[in-house]
Length: 154
Image (cartoon, rainbow, N blue to C red; front, side, top):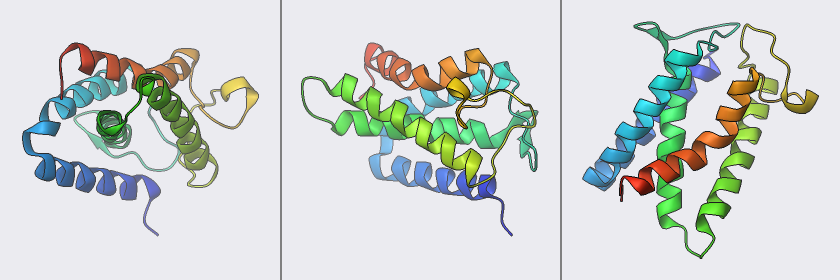
């Protein structure tokens, strides 16, 4: 049986390659910024040791690194195509809902679980991370949008 983490890694890399090829330079800056944020988070937090399989490269767990990079790039692409005067708020809310759903499905149905025993958010079976991890998960999407807006990424 193929591991869910490996499937997600492969799909994310393929989607990023497709988006980079399709949009050429348009995705390059946001990809670099997303990768820097993901690298800083995954290497700093050191919470990403999973129960079953860990795909490590130079000490960095590839699953969360690629998942965060791909997720942030997709978020930025969605944000750029959104319309309306409240698009930042709307896309930020969609990000938070999406991250909660992805974490719930990953933990409860795909068996992607950390080897640690952090409690879930508000005692629910989702976002099993220390408090700073929960804060990061719920805020990094909007923070990434603010950073890329400030830097003029188009």
